Image (cartoon, rainbow, N blue to C red; front, side, top):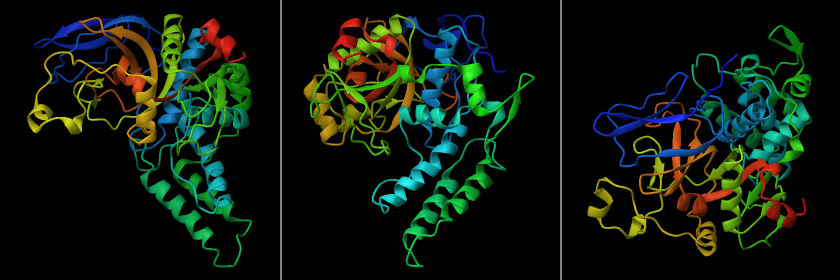
Amino acid sequence: MMKRLTGKFILIPFMMGCLFLAFEGASQERSPESNETPYRFTIDHEVERMPVQDQYMTGTCWCFATLSLLESELIRTGKEAVNLSEMFIARHAYPHKATGYLRLHGRTTFWEGGQSHDVIDMIRRYGIVPEEAYPAMIPGESRYNHGELITVLKSMLDAVLEKKGERITPVWMNAFTSVLNAYLGKPPERFTYEGTEYTPRRFFENRVGLDLDDYIEITSYTHHPFYEKCRLEIPDNWTFSSHYYNVPIDDLERIIDHALENGYSVAWDGDWSEKYYDDRIKGVALVPMKDWEDQTKAEQDEEITRPVKEKEITQMCRQETFDNFTSTDDHLMHIVGLAHDQEGTKFYLTKDSFGTDRIYGGYMYLSRPYVRLKTLFIMLNRRALPADIKSKLGM
């Protein structure tokens, strides 16, 4: 069984002022020695979590981030930490996506993306298994790579939609499932874990046992009424869920902070297409005062040597970037801590899912303005909500 990371983050000086994060009493994840950062972070609050994973060439961040949240919930509630299988969830979601795609005559999306509620839904339907029971690695690959798989599946569905036989036959799903099994393997109906045999449902009941009704999604946009549920109009909401709670941006920020300050973590969905989202070199995501396209070439090329002054983000800013498609549904990650830089500015310590070959060992620091502007939605345990917000949402 994979051991969870324990202990507190510490800041360790390294080569010309560069810093990296390590865990006391745990195997350390070092940053590349050649990278330097103008930021020095201090962790104020953090939650325990499993080690960073690597989704590599797949669009399955929604699985990785949400299962990472649930893994931390296991630890928080005193249960045994388990590395849960992301590909078990993805494998079961594909047929549902395919069915929806055909029923809408291809006038929707079929791809790898998804939402946090998809993970909850798949666990309700099929249970869950540990990583070792279903690694689902494509034969000949040492890392996850679904590029060919998704191309083959999409081509099959588009061929079915051509209706060469004047109608769709009832056996297309058999062919679709066969392709999935060829690439990923058949999901286990029974497996042995630590000497005990389980089905996926029984494993969830006996070894996970979280109340799935506790996990809610929250967003913040003015085109829906506040403190009511709404549908978030983004392509990866392929089930057209209308169960996102909509709150003002100040409440959204307060919800995240309150959760982290009280031992809860947050699955975060947002935009990562910005020029100032730098996961490999600087390890930070920012919203500078001047937009990239408004900067001169010299300003764009200027090396960042000190913390950047950022915009103050309002509800209007959020709405504008959502409506003009400069804030898009790109990536899910797991917010696991609150931090501040050397100037006292708040940042969010965020666990990514692209391996540990990053300056902070697979983690990002999202600035407060970035989170306020670029968050599409969050998922967290409803028990983590401040009491007044919980009351306004009718909980």
